[in-house]
Image (cartoon, rainbow, N blue to C red; front, top):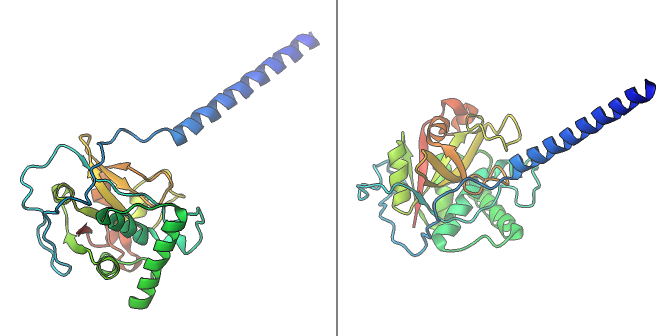
Length: 256
C-alpha cells in the first residue's frame, strides 16, 4: 500500500512538473511570438511629402489627400529609449528623444546602425534640450517641436484635437506622427507596470483592422507595435505639468 501511494505521489509530481514546464514554454512563446502581420513598409526618404506645415500654426493637414489608402506602413528604424537596456532615471525620460530620432532618421533616409549609434544620438538630443530648454525631462509637444526643428531642420507642426482621419492623412502624405500620451492609458503589457505617467511614441502607419502601427520606444518589443485606434485616441494627452490625463489633445506631424 505504501509503495502504491509513493508511486502515485511521484507520478502526480511528474505531471505537475511537466505541466509547469509546458506552461512556462507557452508563456515564453506568448512573450516572444512574432508581431501581427502588418502592411509592407514604404520608404519615405525619396518621396515628396504633400504636407504643408508650419511650426507655429495649428492648421488642417494633408488636405491634398482626398482618398485614404486602406492601409499604410512607413519605414522607420527602431530603437528603444534605453538602447543598451539600461533603464536608469535618465533613460526612463528619453521616450520623446527616441521618437524624434526614429522619425528623423527615416525622413533623412538613414538607419540606426546599432545600440551605440542610438545612444550617441539620444545624448545629442538631450544635450540640445539642456542647452536650449534647460531640461530634457517630460518635454511638451511644443517643446518637442522645437527640438525637431532645431536639431534636424525638419518641418514639424502641432495638430490640436486630431481625428483618426487627420492622423491617417498625415501618414498617407509620407509624414510621421509623434504622440504625447498618458502612458498608463495605453495599457501596453510590456511596460513596467503600471506604465509611465507620460510617454511619447511614433505612429508610422495603420492597417485594415482599425489599428495604428507604431514604433514604441518604451519596450524592446515596440517595433511595429499595434494599438487599437481608440486606445491611441483616448491616450493622447500633453504633459500639462504632470496632470497628463487632463492634458491637451495634440500630436506632432513631422515631415521633410
